[in-house]
Image (cartoon, rainbow, N blue to C red):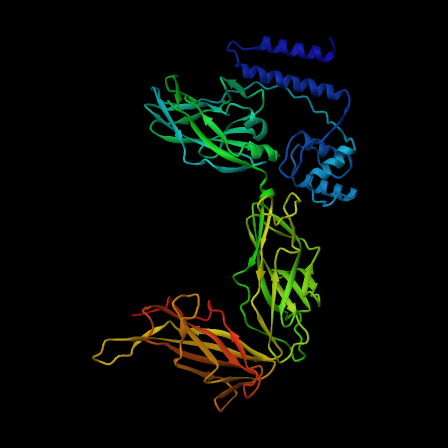
Length: 631
């Protein structure tokens, strides 16, 4: 008999001799045996520092844990990339160390994800890692949870399903303490101390061998009362079913009070896609008398009294593998308007024209964006485009003279999970003339490169993988060397006026008015008092025209430089105020109406030659309030 065997036998004898008159449950004896075996392994480790060969079989990422993570950490420590002791948990420090190692050996992308490429690299090295001896520990005597004070009367329990969690929830690989089934427990007659829950995992080993690694009992305050790893030793056969007993806790349910226990679970860090396809729904069941407690007289009480309680859930691969990134135009993207150059026909930083605000909306995972293409359209194109995250420049690109595309490459910014990041595009122009020319910018999925937190490339094949979708197109901006810059100052709520005589049946028209400022940039501008404005009315806030508000349509300009022959001149670098009024005729069909300033015509020529029409956004240039109802 060798040294370590003698220690083991002696330790077992010591346990037998020192056993108290009240025998431990078999699980307590097993716990002491396991502790003694751990002590023997520690003593063996002290005899030397063995070296083990490791073959990695699974992908590892932040949140992973287990022997493979420990082996990876030991390897990284041996190479000087990880400066802390192995813990068996894959955290940010492990990710950073792995990324540094990947970069050092040319693995791309070097993002700290231990996927198929990195795994193949490690296995090709026949990695050997030193195992770290552990310090022997003295086994502790198992403790029994304290029993709460209870009324000395016979009690009873009823057990029902709690509304939450509901069946059908999606549970992702790597998720921890996800609520699987909730139990409403009510005590009647007296207090009941719940001490055991029996969980039915089904007729096959699938649930615990491929999906769930751990179960917990959680009280209604969120405290974990009991936990049990799921494996062939802890899950036992009960007839045709596989069950696990969650014990070692005291959960007091006072008389006439309902409390909630939740059975929660950990999913394996990696689950196989084929297993997910083969098992789209999994069920956790509490059978008849699956919940057991003791009342104040020491009598055993069980529930549910008849039937079983069950909840199902849908297992899914890690959320990162089904993450989405959607491109769209932001609600505050610039509206159609004028962009005026300097006197040399240039528009440049810090006065670059704001052309588009783009939303990037992520779901389920953080997304890293590295590349995209912005395409210019219209009659004049910017020479350079800039992309800003707030006030931070994240990229810039020249606009190709042939394709009019600007390729933003080698950027790195992140869209947090379930969040929206707004990217604003600005442009520089040269060769701007006195003739108005339209210009706009579009960004779509073409040339857009982004990755989830695992390093997977976001795909436009949204039905099978991560999803990259959508596009954002800015409104047409009028680019001109000198021109008018408009802004809505105020819009009155519509009023009604009776147009019939004193003894006639009343008929009503709608009356509206708007105040707009106009600034002359780069040169003088001119407006006509009779033809400049176009007002419309509509039956909805969309601004879709139902008719032109021409009756008594008038325009008054104040702050102008000169007025001659019905034409106002607004001098360069000055601002005038336009007051425009309109009427909705009483002949319209009964209904609710809004009024809008659709457009204003202006020119840089004193005779209004080559006029420019500036069209306004109907969501801004509209009458105040909810409109007016005309009978």
